[in-house]
Structure formats: structure tokens, C-alpha cells
Image 1 (spheres, helix red, strand yellow):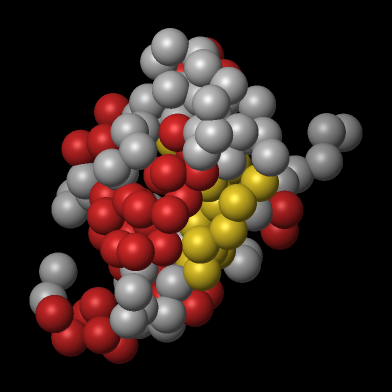
Image 2: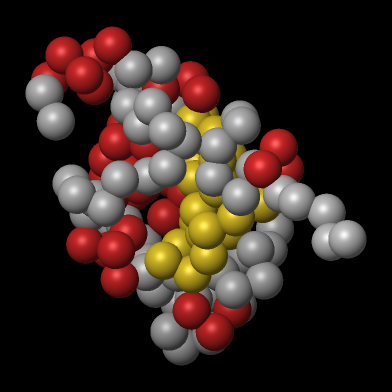
Length: 133
């Protein structure tokens, strides 16, 4: 990917959602929770970028611990697990890559390893879902 491809992309189309209730590997209830730390790491990594980072109380992916999702209107959505509190820069790199995808699919090539290994689900946009007849 060329630098101008990234700079021409509209990053504001991509939203990162981080599960703030995710606990660390010990399962501790201590605050801040690991998910909250990951969300803050993503916010710091997004400094100066036009990328939204939001939190949600639970993504329901507890067996895969720290979880986050990449969303973009009219495109596939992606849920990731097995992240670390330091995965914020990977989420930002994934968001930048996603913003450049003209077909609405997060490219495999160039994706950080944590977003390759940690893929939990890819959810289609409603516009392409077909009714069962």
C-alpha cells in the first residue's frame, strides 16, 4: 500500500469498538480492566488520525479475552479476540487499511498479525444478506 493511498482514505468511515469489560488473563475485576486499557491504548495510537474509537460494555467474546471490532458503513464488520492491552496500534493500522478497501473487505495483506490470528467473525453488511425462500 502506498502512503498516498492511506492519506487519501477517509478514516472517519471506520469505527473501532473496544470491549471495555474484558478482563485480563487472571479474570480480575480490578479497574481499570484490560479492555479499558486497550481502549485507551487505541485512543493514544489514533492521536492525529480521523479514526473513532468507542467502547461497549460487552462484545460477548469472553473466551477469547480482549476483543474489539472494526466497523464501516455498508461494509463487512470484523470482530477480533486474543488482543492485548497494547494492541491499540494494531487496531489503528487495521482501521487505516480498512479505510482504503474499495470493496469493503479488510485486506489480509498488510493486516497486523494480531488481526490475522485474532479474527473471530466477519459480519456482512445487511445490503448483501439474502432472504431464505
